Image (cartoon, rainbow, N blue to C red; front, side):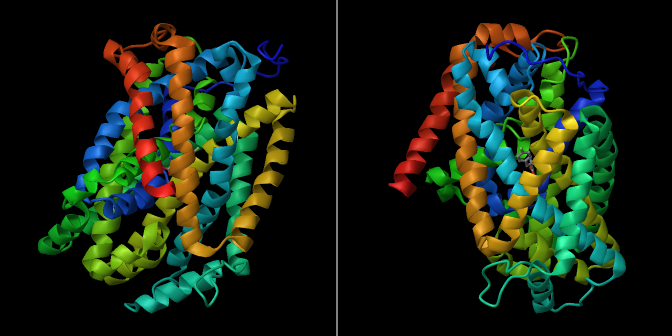
Length: 468
Ligand code: PFF
């Protein structure tokens, strides 16, 4: 019975082909591109990180992204939009819904901390606009601005609740997210992404131009700090795990998000070219913008001490120092944090939609009731993060276990479902319906044989080294 389509309700669909590409790219381009990527690369071998990174992109990222687009549309054209429903039709058994538990929970859990950082971005953009963040060259002033704002206690640990301005910015961010979700896939998510992405490109290019026109020897040193390869990192399984984790996090692959977004496509839509376009846009933002701005700029002004900032500290403690020291820093600081905020909103929307689809399908709720219920759950979770989590270090640890480790498990499940249960021949046929380009045949074989083994080997090696 579970595999029969849910009760008919008003059908949601994307408004245009460009719109869905923008929405998926919007999900992919986020804080991961500008803060997480430079942090991961610097911690895991600098330029050497790019070898496992590109291998993961080609072997895992793009192929798995195609499977998600394909499986999502397959489920969607049969009336299912939530991961449990889609997994049931793919595997032709109701039991398969249990396989998709992570696909529902991971985005929601990530949302709970991601939204807090999104609110910091908005607050920083606001404080640049008003000039309150122009605190001169004193690094300690930025650190205390940050700790006061997010409420980090004397011991450098708990957020300690945060001051009321933080709660105000969280409230604004929350309301914005929920208005867009409430309006629906085409009117809310798609409309916002179509306007936000071009604006993000403009803002990021302005900041990049500013950074690259600093004195050239400094720019070279800055780029060298991030990109000089440390080959010894390549023999450490953690580097490979981190590289594939970054690919998954950044492309939003393995979260159940693309499966959900592509379930609103029709048979006429092209999943192959759209998937590839969204991946390429993400890589442009990540390598060309994220990789050239954040860490090189921080290094130019702050030297090797930037290595100690951690992923999130880099964005909020180190970069304001950089803007303080550059010409027209207030303007560039504003553009940077506003761009980060837009990037974060387009991503956080995609973390909510899978759960909305689940509430609609699993409990037969209308969209507005689902959005309200989800709003309450998500708000409770985010307040928990603000009041009870143990500061920035905890965010990094949490980000590792949910953002890297669990995603890995989910990606493995998806690869096996596609390659061995749904089947690569059906998958290949389904992917090419409405397509304007072909996926080479070897990619299907790669998905069936290489991807599960590749993921398994990294996983086991990491497990032996770190957990046992
Ligand atoms: N891809 C997003 C980023 O790079 O910031 C993060 C993300 C989006 C993670 C959507 C999970 C998700 F469901």
